[in-house]
Length: 396
Image 1: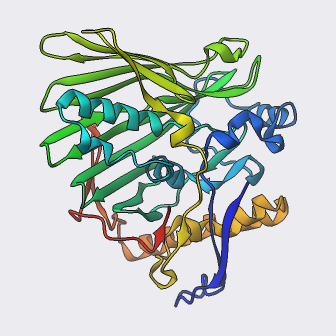
Image 2 (image 1 turned 135 degrees about the vertical axis):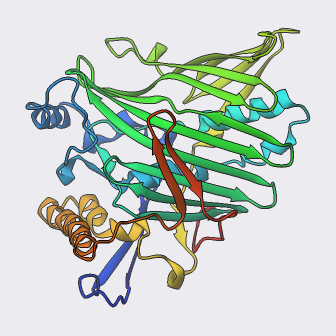
């Protein structure tokens, strides 16, 4: 995996962290490194290891808190995975929202952007479960993105992104639940995503497809399930269905997306969507049968680069590239014993902070979000600041 690696010394008063630290953010997933093409993680070797890891896990069990040895980790946090689906695109998807002359045009642009957040995933490895308070702060042009891990058990990630020039805002609150079925694992990305186009007074709410990891008969990964994208003000809705490969893993019917755009009030279907999220998707206008391409994955999620540090002094100690940098470097070097030690250091640091809070009778609260939970509404993450500031880390 190609990565950007910067070594430097970060002086902190805490003696536990007063050491040479490594900042590392790996290259994002793109069409050039699709899950089944990585020689380092191909079956059958990794498959045997995965099945061995899960041999004592009962079907139906929640794997969210399962502790993985470093050999099963990809060198990045789940926080980075969420973020790069927003800021890592080869073309500017965000500006397209405001270019739509009609509400239908803008919904189509939102649909295309939503599909662009679907990325290839490697089989047999998983990202790190972010530490409590871990952050990721990156700027791409005028779009500033900030994520914070607002809960550890359960693992809840919050995202806030703003573009002052386009007057656009994104707010996500994600809660990942992984269920083991015996022959597969399905990761359900619970929670909601909001996209606000302030120039048009429109708010779009949407969910995410689920990640299916198959072990038998053919190992592989797929995004599956139903996605709904709804504009609260116009009543326009897009419904998408992500379809997995066949039981035997044939590619021809895998990574398929079908759906429709309709008016929720009149129930009138305005367009039909069909294609594959890793190639192209088309929209057929029901009024005149015109068919046009609305999304091209090769243009959008190819040739992606890792973020780079522009302002070293203002990188927060909680930045994911710092929290996990030492471990990620060991994984990339395949230094598994050193990787285990590095992971143990991160975990023990979290336990130490918890003990300190408990001894002082203090409770932890997020720095950048107000968080609430109810059985009826689930998790809600509201950003404290109206706009996300420019980040010391940028991506082109």
